[in-house]
Image (cartoon, rainbow, N blue to C red; front, side, top):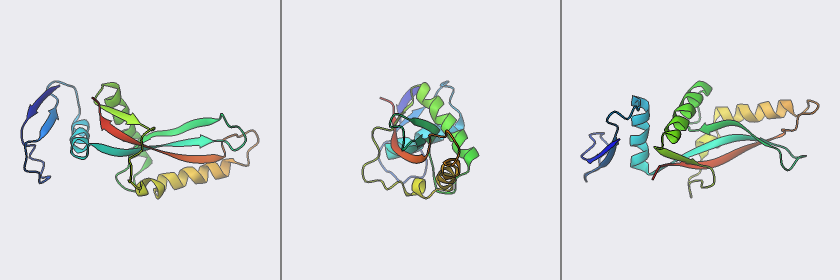
Length: 150
């Protein structure tokens, strides 16, 4: 990846020089490049993961869906899975970091709490509670952040 200083022409309205990360032969897709551009502007973005935990077994915790990045509460499962796969690939390549130990301070995560997907996830856990031997009876929305890798 090659780094250089230039105005990004993205229409974001900033007037100073913009430090852009443009892949020159880096193998990034257009969607990955666009996401990195957005992350560069905001410095940090919200992310979450859906966990299944147990009220009976303290050590039971399972990741049901991660990473979950939402632009709004109506995002489809297909879009979230595709975006999640893209984020994991970019993390593996060293472009960004997904961190569930550091949620964004002061960010309400409203689009996550009110999302159709999280409501569906909670309903699914509620329906499964009555099944014999099913330990996962508690849906958990674990909040985190996305940052450019250092």
